[in-house]
Length: 241
Image 1 (tube, one colour):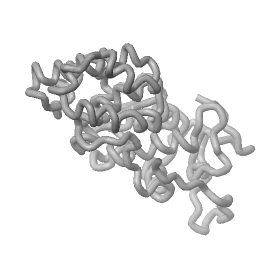
Image 2 (image 1 turned 45 degrees about the vertical axis):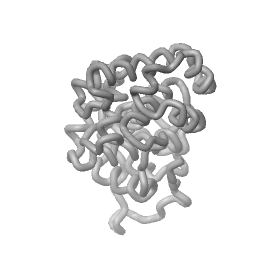
Image 3 (image 1 turned 180 degrees about the vertical axis):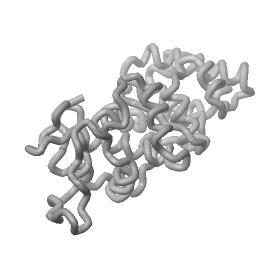
């Protein structure tokens, strides 16, 4: 699990002593300050899915749908020990795969999906995971978020994966007004330098996963409370988007 530090005590600085100005409702949080604060609270924003190569990451990401990274990490060692690459996985009996991934949920559909995915990788890409967005999107079960995860964390190419956590945090910080992942991705790309796309989006995701929770965000312990435009003067969110 990534290390995510929360604020231990409120900022007692007075205006003029180096403290940020109070956030303005409706105005986006200052991105540079947000990234700087998150770099302190999340110094190592690494991917929480365990994977040794793009193929393992692709399969793990597909398995993570409606599951948790921790649960996926508990089943992939046995899965990849039995089927370490696309050529072996394409020959797998789906029922055998089901038994290995059962605890991730929706195991019947996922087993069929990853076997078919392996077949397509062998048939069209010589058993290799492609490193272009347009190619990844042609693979079964791979949407834009999954493709962006593979580009960013499998190939270390600039990309911004947008999941529910990135969506929630981006809305609350005023970086977007949309709930559409593709629109949010473009909004974040316009705001961030390309060199920050991977680390910045990873920190937004982890901040949403562990601090800026959907139902009961930990605002009193949040390092962004001084710049968050969604936080009221009483310390509660104005809108729990």
